[in-house]
Each structure stands twice: as C-alpha cells, then as structure tokens.
Length: 159
Image (cartoon, rainbow, N blue to C red; front, side):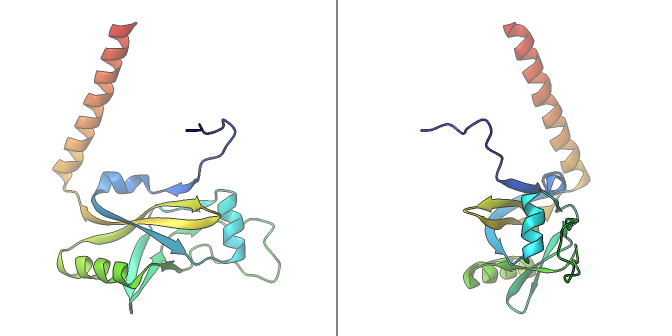
C-alpha cells in the first residue's frame, strides 16, 4: 500500500467536534451537498463551520440548517452571498425514509458531523444521535482523562 505524501492536504473541510461530546452517535450517513459556486470556492479555502448546524427533514427532503460558509472577498459583484443559507442534502429516498422514521418514533436527532472532499465533490457526514445526560458527559470526560494519563505513564515507563 502506498503511504500518503507529506505535502498532501487533508480531505476534511470542517468537523463538528461538539457533537461527540453532546450526543451518542448511533448511525452515520454520507450525503451530497447542493452548493453554489462561491460556496465551493470558500470550502476549498476551508472557510466552513458546523458548530450549531442541524438537519431538517421536510417534504421527503433533507436540508442542512445553521452551517456557516464564510464568503471570500473575491466573490463576484453580481452575487449577494448568504453565509447561513439553507442547503439541500442529497440522499437516497430509502435513507431519508429511514432517518425520518427514527427521528419521529425513537426520539433521535439528525446532525452533521463533518464536511469533506470525495472525488472533487463535497460530502456531508450526517448522523442519527441521542442526547447525552450530564452524568454521561462526565463519565466520558473521566475516561478520556484516564486514557491520557495511562499513555503518559506508559511513555515514562518506556523511557
């Protein structure tokens, strides 16, 4: 297998780091994203945020709300960019039906986890999630701290 070249940039555009802390991730889906030209240019420059974004399911379609794509200063003069506009997610009908069923019945929420490049197309990883309780968040943080401390102890023992 060939290794990745050192100068090669990452395919990831934006991550929703808050999602792993706030939610239990149950199931992931890959969705295409309908974008305008200036948005693609901004994404190539890495100017995107998914912090407070969520997925709205309406009329058999999925929409990405709350994502912020900062327009570049070189955007055409005849286009008025809207950084937080609602963007359509491109999914198969079966996937949308599955997501709608889980969201309506089982109390799941659908949120975006990441934006990334795949074969020169922008993809959005979305997930069905359930909210964590406060004690779950504390337990996760304790476990993370303990794992970090274990690594330090092992590293010091090997030196």
